[in-house]
Amino acid sequence: MSNPDYVEPQAYEQHSKNETGSDGKDGDFTWDDATWILTSSFIIFTMQTGFGLLESGCVSLKNEVNIMMKNVVDIVFGGLTYWLFGFGLTYGKTYSNYFFAFGYFAVDEDLDEMGELFSKFLFQLSFATTATTIVSGAMAERCNFRAYCLFSLLNTIVYCVPAGWVWGDHGFLNHLGAIDIGGSGPVHLVGGASAFVAAWMLGPRLGRYDNGRDPLPMGSPTNALLGLFMLWWGWLAFSSGSVFGVSGHKWKFSARAAVATINASFGGGMVGLVYSYVRTKGKFDILDLISSVLGSLVSVTGGCALYKPWESIVIGAIGAALACFGIPFFDWLGVDDPVGASAVHGLAAFWGVLAIGLFAEGEKLLMPPNKITPGLLKGGGGYLLGVQLLAAVSYVLWSSVVTYILLYITNKIIKLRMEPHEELLGADLVEHGIRKSGVGVSRAISALGSHPDFDIEAAGQAIGTNPGHEMALAKYIRDRERSKRKNNGHVPENNHNNTISWMG
Image (cartoon, rainbow, N blue to C red; front, top):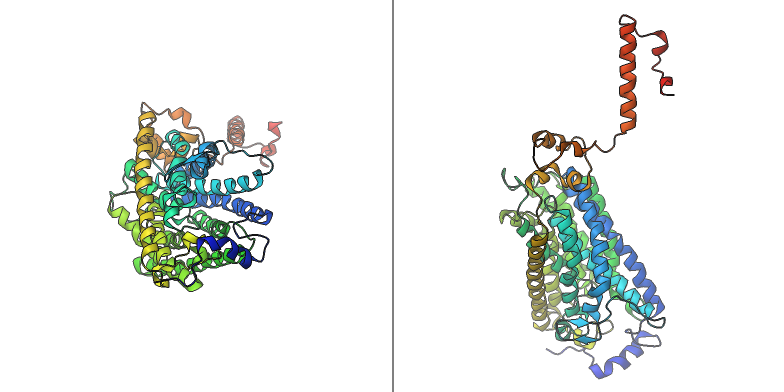
């Protein structure tokens, strides 16, 4: 079926110039676009806070600092390698084929070009670190921190190559007309598939399925919900910023992307509430709601600027259902993913990539000539859906295989999984020297006191205490007892007011 809105490639430049109302086509990059992209990048960067809060809220309290530290590492190591070679493998101009590009290594540019290049680099950097952070949650509570640092350093390649397939000028998916505006495929599906492989390779946490497959208690539901709000906020920039500017007609599609994103979360949240109410027989589970909202956001991101508001609600609702049902399915398979990243960022993202092939509008004002074929439900036939299916399968295969190879190599250098006694003590204590009260650490220390690989004296004191005050109080109590003995069991009158003048 022919598309009445199709614009011949040779007419595209003149058409865009006439329609944008600006001095050039929508592809021209202006300082307004740079401001929009940089602002979006800063907001997307705050999503690391959201991921950290969410993941730390889902794990036990003796591991919450460790998971936050992994989010820091993702930025430090993942950001360094993306600057060194990640951006170049996605957008390099020195050499390229359909699968790889080279150039822009150790990103730098002269005065005339640095504004555009640095804006795009920072925006894509925020995407790259997000793809790695998705994996950290699936590896929580049993991954060696040093091994994770090495993996984070190398994991950039898992994201940057498939990102080039769809966003780079050289990419084979780009040439076929595959569409992904906000990263449902190269960010979330890649991250979700990597998370599944990582969780499978590490194996379940000790005792995870000994008493059934029900979810374990959350360490801090409040932190997890705060993380959801941070991610919700950041996702608006994630989607609307992916239009890559506000000049010409782009500001209209940025607004549309934001509406589609927020509407999708409405549909996802409703599905989560209903699912939780039925599953728990009248209660509302925190993780069910969080997973449903995030699943809806993941699924709508790829085509956010191409959907009508009602369509985004439907897409988000389906993505939420896949996330909610996917989490117990993976537990049934014995793949222990503490935060549900494999379902939320994997299954929902796979659907999100396919949804573009169903609902995408043939937007000639936004998309280049080879990407204005409408989706199946918009009269465009099955071509776009087929390309999107190829893209989704390609993302999964690449990220699964490469993640396996990277983790296999990492495990040969530094053992990937914590030792059993370390897992019982908790990563906060073992990896960071942070001891907490009331979270089972003291019991583990008592049981493992004679363990050859654990020094009980190195456990230190619980955080939140003031050793100086405790020593002073102990000295006060000793002095008071000594005074009582000297006075036949009576405390002298000058000591009844609990004076601390003796500390002088």
